[in-house]
Structure formats: C-alpha cells, structure tokens
Length: 303
Ligand code: RIB
Image (cartoon, rainbow, N blue to C red; front, side, top):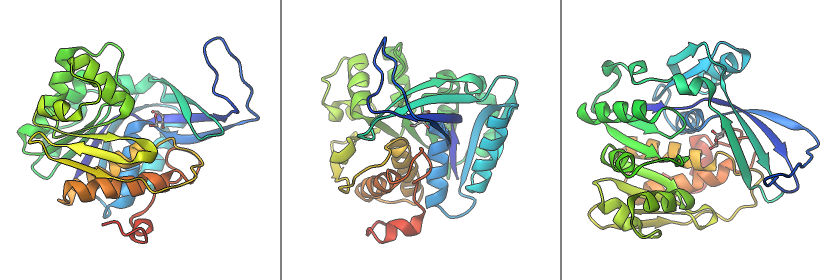
C-alpha cells in the first residue's frame, strides 16, 4: 500500500502575463478552480499509475464544500479516503499565479491541513509493504512520528521536502533525513536543505551521505538525478515539451517514484518513469488535470 500523509488544498489559479512581485498588482481575466495540495496531488498521481486499491491518503479537510468536493475527487481517482478526517477548520486553499512561460508562484492558506495529527494513522495501516509519502504542508512533528512508525514496521518512507519551511533547523533536517529512505527535492529545496545542514549547495552526494537516505533532485527541463548513501549516481533526462502549466509536475514525479519503488523497480528506471509522468502532467491546466494513467506512459517506453 502507498500511504500519502499530507495536504489537501483547493487551488484558485489566475493566469497572468507576469507574476506580481512585492507591492505590485497585476490583473488576470478570470480564475480557475482546481483540486490540489501536494499530498492530494501525489496521491492522485500514484493512483492513476497503479493498480486499483494501491493508494490511500490520510489528511484533514474542513466541513465545507471544498472539503467535500476534494474527498469526492480522491474517491473518483481511486484513492482510499478512510483516513481523511473532516475537522472544524476551513479546507486548505492555495492561491496560484501562472505566467505565460507556465511558471507559477503559490501561496497556501493551510487551514485544516494544520489539524492533521500522527494519531490519524493507526499502526494497523503500517507494515513491511507500506510506502509512506510525505511533504511539508502538514505539521512536521506529525509527519516525523508517522515516518518513524512506518520504518519500525518495516515499511519505507519517501519524503518530499517541499516547501522547505523558512525556520527549519539543522536538527529537524537531520531527523527528516534519518527517518527517510528517499528524499525528493527540487534544486531550490536542495540548496535550502544544504544551507541548513552546512554542506556545499550543489553536493547532493553529501546530502545522501549525511544519512542512509537516497537523495533525488528534480531539475525541471534538465530531468532528475539521484545519489545514494553508498555513493552511486543516477540521472534521467526530461522529455522536451512545450508546457501549458507546470503546477503539480513535481508532485506527479513524487507519485510516480512511489509507484516504481512500491513495485520494486531499480532507481534508474524509477527516475525515468518519474520524468516521463511529470512531463505529461504539464500538458493540461491545474495540478491534477494532466496527470497520466499508466497506459499513457507505455507509448513513451516507460516501465
Ligand atoms: O505542488 C503544487 C501544489 O502546491 C498545489 O496544488 C497547491 O495546492 C500547493 O500545495
């Protein structure tokens, strides 16, 4: 079972010529509403690439229309929602600007995501077949607790350290790495982690060697690369595409890596699978709109 412990957001997306900087106001013709949240996106990405019944999510939403719709969306995509709790805080909401180059800027109002706790995952859900997937949009202590329990039960942990919280301490970063089998970050996040840990910014080998975790870095159009704790290095190219919207591409990559590792694939194959899935996800608007099903990747020679 792939278990995603993470955030659910409703994404409000405005398409703009230029993303507003501090003190600026920019106009968009309209806005779109999409399902999002890094946790929910990764769960949907994994479910679309997996056999039915393989993916579950633990999360919190509010007792509002956004929350109800988000649960229905997960159900429709084949994600088990038994561990999605309805609480008395509004469902998380993300305000997203996408510019003409398909780059984005995101502000998240966490809302109900802040109520998710370690107690939302019973020990009975964790075993040697569990692949736990985490991000950084729900309380860190709760994620750390579930990560440690998963490893104690013999399962594996994939931690997407996104976004890197501004106040992340060295001890927290080390605890995160020590509780992870695989760390996934983009280039900015890799630099932020390296700064917190006091190691050279571009040295992911050192990041991996600081713990027993495999470190994967996504690099957009340049693909992805990985370094293992025992010094092996892997890389995969990104297919050349004209993206419509890159929101959720990183989440698609994480979901695909979870599926590949759950299936026992080699790390190099997993990277190629992740890059192809992430590229396909960029052809439609919204984080989840373009996430591919498994058949869509067969034509690209993936797994
Ligand atoms: O990674 C993209 C996601 O980040 C969006 O769906 C938004 O909800 C934010 O959480």
